[in-house]
Image (cartoon, rainbow, N blue to C red):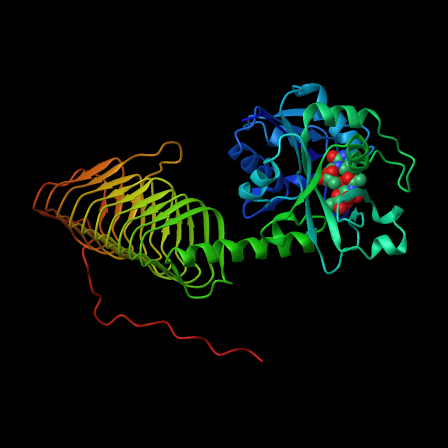
Length: 456
Ligand code: UD1
Ligand code: MG
């Protein structure tokens, strides 16, 4: 295959976002617009990716530093042709150059591959729109061959009636692109160097100009305002929901799910309304996610049920567990099979082994809990002394009575029972009842105070 160089235009100002942040750094589905484009570009195995940046200074290269991409500064911004010119010195002459826009996040790899089919043509990604306003129009001759692109501001009324528009995304042999860009002039309505002028140059030179179309309109939709951002977000979420359902996931309402990352599901997974999935989430067979739950970077094994309003982050949850409603599993939570974590229970950086239960109102932090342990309502691991965190160890078959405070570092040995209301500060022996509780007393004949009469 021909070497591929990808140029991503991202220098524009994004005035209509009304934001201090460069437009391409605003997030769609949890990732900056530009990151979507970079991720897609990477799937095409290019020799080089060069991002043209300008507005917002170093914010763009800094935010994208983890990507294998080069950057070219465009200052001032004199148009799309001028932008591509800034990248060219960094690109080798052989092979194809693909121009993408940093604010058009959802073009799919399959569509771009069709753009790269011909190694000696100029290929444009075009689309027919009911309302072509604002776009450059594709002008064709009587034989249907593309002759040029005319920008709306330079177009005649007849040309404005054309519904086939330029998406801006194109591919061409790099050495030809270089030659054309050297000839660009800015004698047009906007006084800019238009990348689109290369089309007429290619035609004059006898280079084939062809058009391919995207499979979906959202693939070529750009973001100029927060309204367009929200519309594109919905379109993309609809697509992701559709893909999940096609794979067999039951979504109670495909319009009420948000996926900001990668959601991988087994068979017969069911997801109720209002759930948000962030980062990498894997759900095993028959998992059920209750309404309005948020799951981030977590793995949930087969047949586990997450009840509504649960928050789960960086957790590894075994099979057949019952979590929530209103459970909070924080980073470093690892649950074995058939664990129950109930309402208003918070777990952080803790392991809870199979068949253990914490059903009500507890905080379990920095703890290692064995199997078949029962944590009574209101139990708290006191893991923090104001300076350091300490671990609590609770061995197999322990029963912790309600409202117990366990002051770490401490170990509750196998089979121990802790009486309700205890404050445990020292290790407790195996199979014994341990409790720390002030003695109950009663004062006979004690008289309850009565309220005095109010003065007028
Ligand atoms: C451009 C096309 C138009 C097409 C439309 C699709 C030209 C002359 N026109 O118009 O045919 O229908 O896109 O949306 O190419 N950019 C830079 N530096 C610049 C100018 C722009 O990096 O100096 C970047 C922007 O950040 C953006 C992209 O190029 O990502 C397009 O710029 P924009 O100003 O939106 O171009 P349009 O005038 O909309
Ligand atoms: Mg535009």
